[in-house]
Length: 176
Image (cartoon, rainbow, N blue to C red; front, side):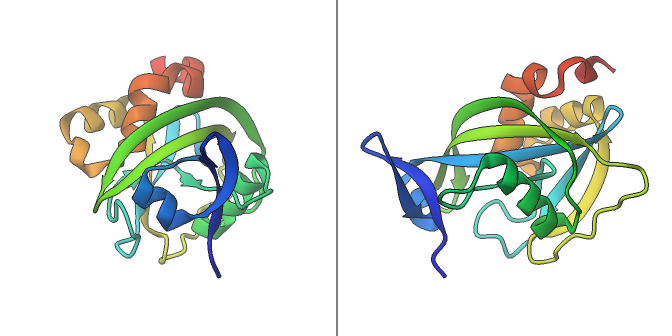
């Protein structure tokens, strides 16, 4: 099945196949989620079979909404698809736009709706190995330090979120 995502072509929102959008660097919709426990966020290491940024650490989950799918429904769907999680209450935090080279001639030019939620202590991720090879809970302070010292281990978008949008995503948690 073709994976059509909402993409702006000549300033009109148009369904475009996901790989084509990345090959052409087209501006498109996306969703990112950060699940928290106190000042720790759940990170995932992308599976080696991913067509871009394999093996890199990223936020809890991210994806592109299907054509006609709401950002919130997309975020909930992807928590299940990638991490085997049940629906988690999510709070909309911000919409950001970025453009980043993700390797292999692919460009992410995304308009991202960002959500944050708290994962209860009694719920654990059960990652889909086709999507996620590892998960870890990491404090925002340690994550910021690691990204600064070893940026090549992290996806470009996670680096951008932390550097440019940390206050709007995490609020007071960044100083904890």
